[in-house]
Length: 82
Image: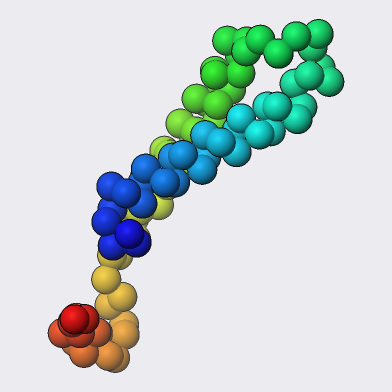
């Protein structure tokens, strides 16, 4: 499953969503009378998620995807599993 990018992304998204639900479940009842979601909950999540996505995209674009100074790079690129 680790080699399938879509499955890994789906599991990661599920884990993030459930972590948010868990934190919401623990904290929000102490702050409010009822457990109704507020629009600011989604707005805060979108703001933080968007900022982190922008940062990750900027860092990924500036970095090399292949380790250029690795003396065993050729051997690593030829490696195949069965």
